[in-house]
Length: 103
Image (tube, rainbow, N blue to C red):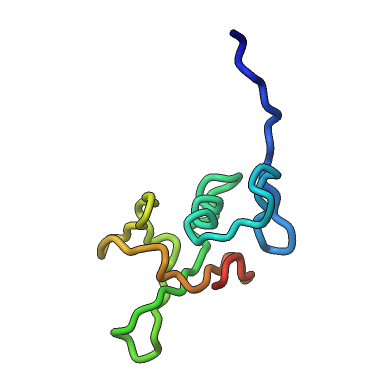
């Protein structure tokens, strides 16, 4: 049996937001997908990103994490030198002065 060949689909960036391939049917919606896009699609733009991370221990209610501090992107967590942090606490991701993800 011959394998089914599928066309190659490229991700596009329009107006600062990533657009997913047609099989997903819409814009990228999770922080994990956005961080993976910044790291793996085209040039590595993750070091340019600024992540707004919800942190109840801080008076302002959040902390800023630079993309250059991220050492690994896992399935449910991303890792920095300080530890593993869950994606669901990411409130906003900015890259190059544009907001690419916001809850």
